[in-house]
Image (cartoon, rainbow, N blue to C red; front, side, top):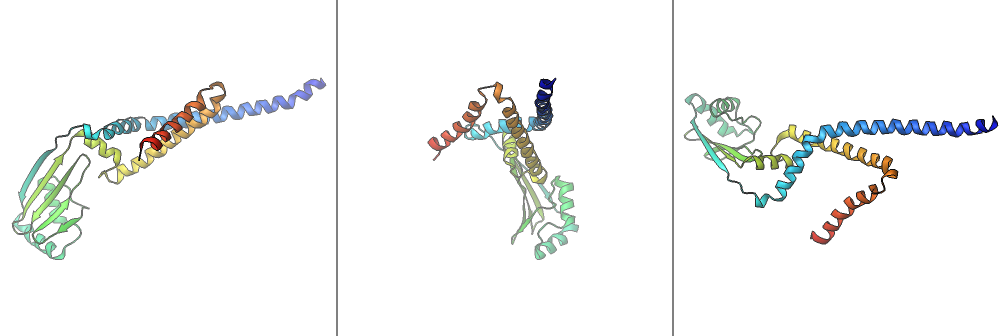
Length: 219
């Protein structure tokens, strides 16, 4: 009886340790799988575009250009003339609405550059480029669009080039989810490393290999 009583505190401590371990393992697995599910498609996209970006000079692209032209209505000529004098940061709303309705191009929120004979709006976009110009004398509006193909489009998504605020937020949130995924994976490795002797050598190789490549081959 005395022997049983002396062992009982150790058994209780062991039970508490096992309960605590089971709790944290459950939490880590939960965070790990949720973050991996959120990151899955994004990681596939960024991994694939990492390859295409690394071989961008070997992937040929044939840009296609399209152009639209339209004459500004007489009713809007005074609006254009007044804007050319005032040189606002954006095209006036009536002009922007006419461009959207006639050329299917949105210039709201875009900065306009005024010169002596033209109003010019740069319209950069992922996977290509575009611009709009309005001749101040004739009132002719010209919109030109350059499309460099879907690979270029995906590459620009990878870089966040000309993708806007919403995509910028997505990249930040996606990067945060990747951090959760990798850090919970690291802690799970710690939990299971005792039964998997190759765990830390593999992790060390993942650190040492890129470090050696950077030191030896990147100048």
